[in-house]
Amino acid sequence: MPNFLDTTPRIFFSFIILFFSYPAFSRNLTELIEGLLNTDTSIKNAESAVTEARNDIKTAWAAYLPEFDVKFIRGSER
Image 1 (tube, helix red, strand yellow):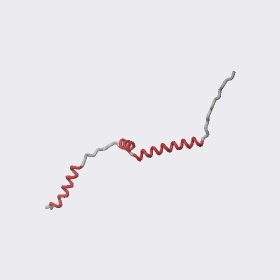
Image 2: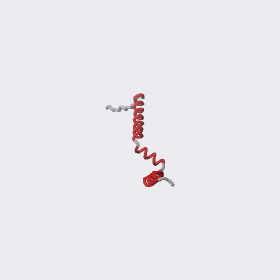
Image 3: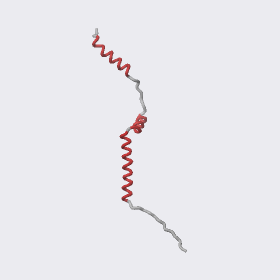
Image 4: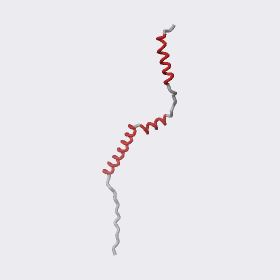
């Protein structure tokens, strides 16, 4: 016959698992990734760093290339 002290922890942990477990459900992977893209701060920081780098590239090209300006001076004398 099993001892009471041997079966008590098993029963106790069985009740804990039974009462404190919640039903599992699945979610679509694309929904999870979209939610992560909208809420994760490291991703937002990386996006702003990429935008800043693109602006730096535009500034570097503007400093490297010559300016092209066309002016039409028009006048008439009588």
